[in-house]
Image (cartoon, rainbow, N blue to C red):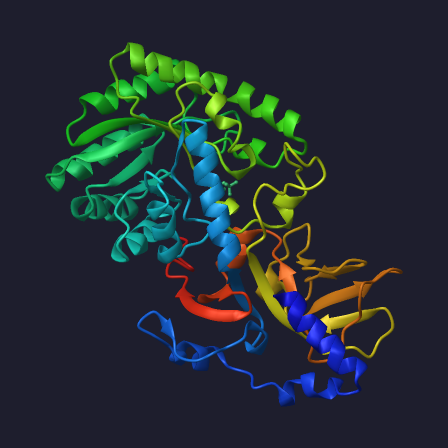
Length: 413
Ligand SMILES: Cc1ncc(COP(=O)(O)O)c(C=O)c1O
């Protein structure tokens, strides 16, 4: 659909009427105006994405739905479940779409994200980060009190004791999983005997109910080349599987053995015992993931489509070889590789300046831009980009179909 809009623009340019595409002639909507048109889940009127004020965050609904369906189909065929990570989208409506498609629950990274998800009707939540401070432990236990489907990760005996005390004080039984370190030493307990001792302790402590283990191998997700990624992650998860066996032989719960992500979703089922994958980025995709290569396409990871884009406007076209847009670091982050211009070639984009993005044309640029033109950017790394916006526009074709609150945006505590 972007193409039809572009060709209309080209047509107008070729007929000498390009000026009508300058901002003064476009109806143009502010974020508040579009939100005011979105009543009871329905857009009252036709708004094209090209008329949105910029920078704005857009999600292509067809692509989003295809990504969710493809993930679910692949995992089902491989005999493994999905427990998607809501840290990526922070948007309850998308979490609900994932559950409706068959996910067994969702994950959150922060207790505040979990609270927001629960307030918005999501009640099967695995929090993958250990809460260590008394405040956060209290919040997690309060959430567990209201939400029986809330499960909390823990990775030390000290922490398990604190969880037990807090749960006992509140007269609840809290569900917990043991977080296993896959070797990156970021979080988790060492697999093997240490993890087994922790699981045994949890099993005995009052107020706690052991549900199993998790092991997220973040270090393998972006390894370039499918075969390299496969051998690394399968090797790194051997110790977690051995720990799973220790739990099983010790009569401890192995009901949940969660791990894996977008980069390894079609590999993780080969890790024996793994019950579900905590896939996050697949819903949106980004240029970081595009570069890793897939099983069927070694150059570009094209298993899932880039549904999330930032719409921006050209502010300056006066200088040879470049143009300036209104989306800089505060709209795109400074993550690398930089965002990419959707549907165009022979040009690069960078967002090093706070409020300005830079387009640089190469020799074979597919087009050039005029002031007021819109530029659609494939995001660099979806999670931190989403966290910069209060809402995203849900687009079908070119039409704004919904305005979704990113309700857990900024929930970083
Ligand atoms: C614990 C955990 N699980 C799952 C994910 C999702 O990973 P991905 O976006 O690669 O699917 C992340 C992402 O950082 C994570 O930290």
